[in-house]
Amino acid sequence: MKITLTGEESLRLEPTSGPLTIEAESPDQSYSPFHMLGSALGACTLSVLQSWASNKGLAADDLRIDITWTFLERQHRLDAMRVKLDWPSLSAELWPRAVRAAGLCGVHQTLTHPVHISIDAVGAESPAIVDWVDYEKRAKAADPIAFADLLDTRAGPGHDQDQVLGIFTTNGDFNLQSSANGSNIQIDASIATIRNGGTGGIKTTGSYNFNTVNIVGGRIQNNIKTINVTTRNVFFDRRFTNRPGFAPPWFPSTTVTQGGALAVKVTPSVQRVEWLNQTIVQ
Image (cartoon, rainbow, N blue to C red; front, side):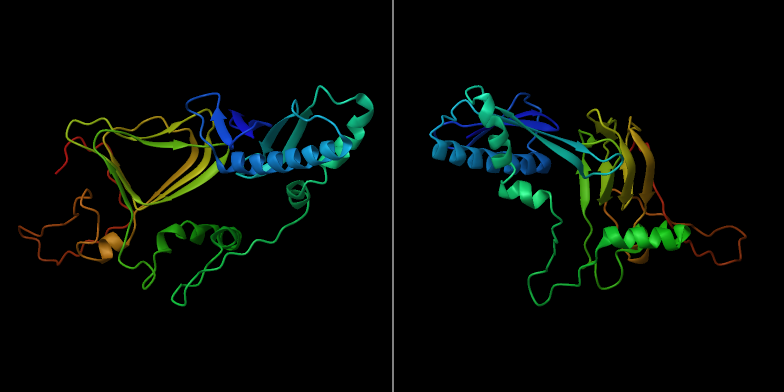
């Protein structure tokens, strides 16, 4: 079987001898999870039709299957999938039967009926799993103001294991690419694209735009670059200020020095801090 990726939202399957091959018409085309889902539907349909053709004594060497899909507006999930059968040698009177046979594919039947999916942690020491998608929906509906602090408080005491993800580059950009218009993305990391005299920054690539981008952990970059985003939120991880020495090395310390005739004790308090356009790294 040969699978050819014909676009961001399409692929073609055709029967071949030998092992499975996956090719792309463009060198920049990646094999996304939705391509995998489309491949599963196409491979299942091809297998069913080959079996049906064998029982009928028909040739299926010229059968080609094109799978396309569309996304729901402003959501990163599928709205519809389309299966197109191209079978030049099949006679017109057999087409209705072939279409009915294609609908018997197990993957087709699975996708057209609700499926319950559960997520379980392996190991007795695994922490409780929270459905953050459902939690965010309920939290935002109940209290939109408190919802703004949701991402900032996820790393609560006892659950962070004294770790934070840092993404750092001295000679490149941090690129965001969406597979559909209106996608939302959350980056649970501290991002740094900096060096002395550098030009690095955060930018979007591709033809699709984002709805909301949340960066949890702050960012620091040499340049502000084009980013096709409707709403962008940058949260500073409060653990950076609550724990001495916990912040990533590229975030400078924030201190207030008392001096002169000032007689009042000053206690600095830093919340949601971000540094932008840092041309000199200290």
